[in-house]
Length: 450
Image (cartoon, rainbow, N blue to C red; front, top):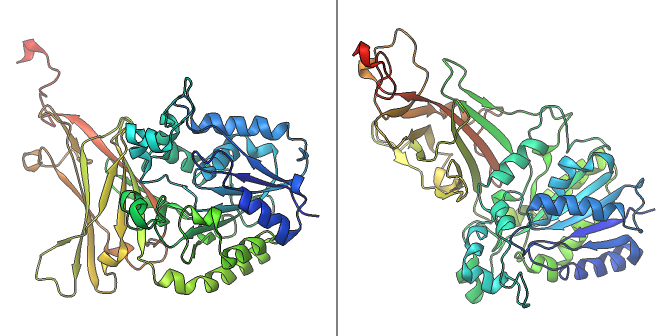
């Protein structure tokens, strides 16, 4: 007996694009049409958030007459649908059994198009056309959650990917198995000139699709052990074994409207996975099937960075940069590594860095370092690392550059920092200090003691 399947569409799809996949499931797998349910939600109203949609999904699920509250179900999601499902799973899903999540071009960490959609032009092309109170709205709060480096996707990852106690995606049958697909191509024609950017399927970044993420914590307020890289026991979590599976000659729209026979085969086989051994076999099968496509694609990675002070307040004015030395480098010359940066408009302490790993040239690289600079905007305050009491403060820069040697992370498996087609979260903490560092500071002082 097959599980019911819920199809959750992406931003502004209005429930139409999943009809093709519903027909495929009925034809290829023999599903009862009533057991394949398309979930529609309103994403173009400015007051609605992704959290609202997730709660609405829970309410809708409880009253669906075709899905028994006690029976497990599968989910196929497209684009923004993954954020709806993950948000639901991390808050409301503990009482429901979901067996498989099949993600088609998922916006697991947002989209480079989201911040553009708030403009009038975005509303014109994606917003409501019907006259009424929501006319030409583009869904500002949903787009805010979809923006690269958003607070929403940061918080969500900490709930379902990095929670220390609750495991949401594990190898056993009590957590769902996740299958992630994305097209290898952007849009063509005029649409491609407007929308497509490097390392994407036209709408979502390849590096921002999968859930096999890691987190690096850089705490400069500590005297030692300043960095920590999350590690998961492979017997408890499947985050690191949920690979990116590219699909040849498919983009963000055609993965829904015109899926290839290869994709249909991989999806239908995924629906037959019931236990850990079958999942591992499917992963190996899909990797082999997509190997040539993956090899031909540029290798991109995302870093979502949050900078804060020791109080937890945001650091909004900063710069982060990677430098490398290769076998051909001259002396102490460091070469800057080109990175595309997007600052989250809702809070500039969150930023998304997009890196083509082919620019890294890790075969010839010998040394790697990270430099981080931050400014308070005033000479009365500065950001500093931990300063021991016996430190000669006369040599402390008012605007120091924080440097971290990443060379050990280049090749050590447990500390490796660069993984293509993944997103790595980086949290940086600095001390925010009144200046000068010691003795009388220029912000608060006693007049009589001057």
